[in-house]
Length: 423
Ligand code: HAM
Image 1: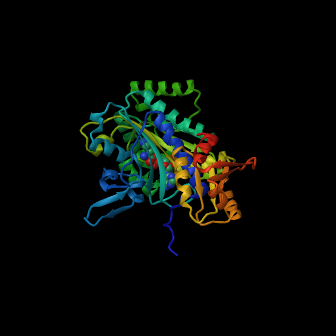
Image 2: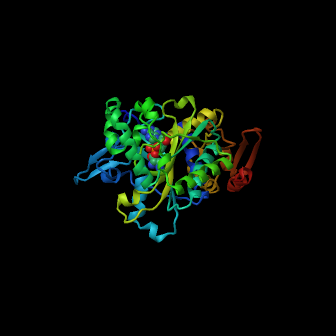
Image 3: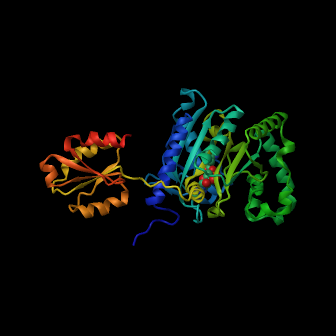
């Protein structure tokens, strides 16, 4: 038997209903907040994700699906959505054509070659939002509240918001130098990957699963003393705004994120759900200011964004809303006992045009079989059409709650049901 590749899932049935429900909610929520949808190609030129030969991120070093096409082009399946969005904005010159900030969201499959487990897949879905050209601290603040409101609307409460400030170019440069200097005497106590990161990005040693637990790593210099006065003021304003808005958060000085493009505030939302042990970060994002230049524009534009792993969001949602029913129901089911089923087609399409969900099973001619099949979709009404009804140009409408039956003229049935179901 041919099976699906490791680390992938089929989205259907009840899980598919949850997926659709959450997707529709996210589209509505984003559209109401003036975000426009953007969908970029599933594969891109490899250099879009590996912009720097010294890139130290796991994604670039070991997780990307890279392949050559028949024209010998080096391509990669998209591991994340931010770089493609910025590539699109530069390529389409959108930042010159539309007023800033540009606001985009996407709901797309991403690909990372990771060891699969619950909440970690090789093909997974991300909802992401990007604010491009965000010069006000309130854009960043609003984006974090936006993420929290998504969880609130989905009745997800069992999480921790972690925030850190990892510096602008200048303060970061000084901090990274200090970190490198500090770690060199401990070199023989670091793992191989951290030794590599000493040169490429010593900040990542802080969040390394193994080294992050070591005492000397916990005592490494913090960014605080390298910050400019302006940055200190911004941080003060940011945290006091969060407090004034009643937002609970933890400052986590080891939070540096797994991608190289961040500058300034970064955040993660970590679920406490038992179902997500080990893979509990449902949302991650922050400020990034160097992607425009890295991708080929002549100046940088400040941006802020985050992404949610939909699989993890669904696990947290299910865990905290066990009784929530997203299954779709039919409004009307047609039970035709006639050989010629097409008599019903016009009525069914008229109902659908009016947002009334209806269906039939064209393989069945027996009333009991129709009822048994219809049970799967819990219709509000079942319409029965037999030889006698056809001869009298009628149809029987059975209310599935009261079980009362009414006889209605065939040419009036659509209007009758539109009034009854009333959408
Ligand atoms: P990220 O932290 O790499 O950030 O991914 C964001 C979220 O995607 C994670 O918090 C997690 O929920 C989900 N995720 C990541 N890898 C997997 C996986 N293998 N299986 C299932 N879910 C996964 C980014 O991708 C950034 N582009 C976010 C961003 C947007 N930053 C600024 N704008």
